[in-house]
Image (cartoon, rainbow, N blue to C red):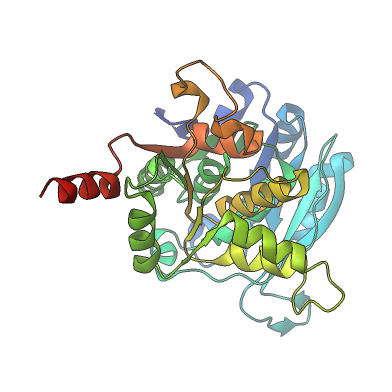
Length: 354
């Protein structure tokens, strides 16, 4: 057996039937076992024997992928611990057969204290993901499942890890992860993908006084990734205007637009103290972007408490951002301090001396 520790992930190369009983308790189990619909030797029948252990070691239950042909077999394997099922993934259109929709992946829910899920949407697979494994799942789907059934810092187990998509989603969402894979070539791919995921920041916070180049750098990044930059005042003004009966856009539409941009930079954070509702919306936008793996830049003249000369004052950025946002910065963010002098002021001083 081979074990790799990467970030908050522990990855095992070996048989899940042998490894799972040695793990102790986890918060949640997501499993995508072979369910007898493929042509490969490993996918000619539903793989069973792991379900009881998964239910026993999971505090908040098990979600198990299965195809239409294997639903009855999977439910029987879980026995009395079976709770419900939901449709998780429509593979780019459905093919009708005598037993149902063959391109729909169904998730079974089992165990105690389960945070129940919901039907999900249609997702696609990128060409890169398709090359990693013959039976890949979209990263967007895994983000949705992990987000729905777990909380930050909880421990997720995937006993059929494959190329590591569940682990990538956990790294992006601030979950701890245990993955088990029996095929070495897929195990190696998973290790590389999860290592990259843990090394990729999603939140950048630029702090410093006026004239230090924060906004200039953010504009360059936004332009490169075809995103947008707004001041905090512009965002809050749009949201306030949406409350009018004559508004052309709703509050939710504004937030959803900002949450989907390829890159979003928010300038002048902390210039004015926003209401609790506005701070909640900012936290919601950043959280949604983080879930989708999209980068966000926060720009502020304030400083973080860690570098405050007095150890904490009204000018600390923490007074203007929610605890969730600061947690994102601590867990998987980058703080960029622009500590040099105001170049505009320096330029004016030099010009005055000429």
